[in-house]
Amino acid sequence: MKPLTEQEIRSAFVNCTKGEAKRLSVPRDLTDRPWDDLDFLGWRDPQAPDRAYLVTLSDGGPRALALRASHATSGHLRRSMCSMCLTTHTGGVSLMVAARAGRRGQQGDSVGAYICSDLACSLYVRGKKDAGTGGRLQESLTLEEKIRRTVTNLDAFIAKVTA
Image 1 (cartoon, rainbow, N blue to C red):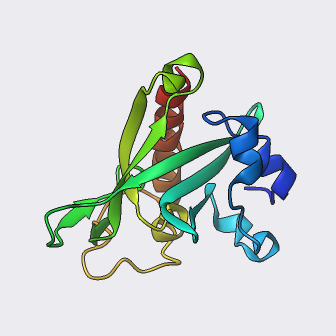
Image 2 (image 1 turned 135 degrees about the vertical axis):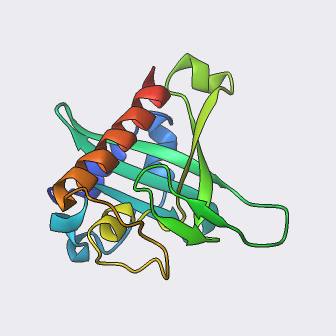
């Protein structure tokens, strides 16, 4: 992924107003991100931990989603799998909910997916970040195929949000 500026990120949001995009927390360390290893940029808002954001590049340029992380209420941790990168975590996967773009989202319609809580799918797939014992299943796919699968899953999620 190519490095993005704060302005590019703010103007890429498809499921929030321009005012909301202007006020949201963008990472201050954009220049320090491992851009070559990212299929998308994802982060949690340090002031509002239930808010998360992701930005990806498509043919038309950057597209960004504002997400809300749902918290488990059961009080005990269980092993879950990210629906984007297929990494398993104990307590490290959250239901991320995105308001749909446009009128449907304004009326409260949303789409959810189980995603790595730290939004570091790209780094888990590449082995740059460790999810712990059993975090990555043994597969016969090449790294390129795993990356392509993650991007395809993310694109499908974005398509549901923008449909």
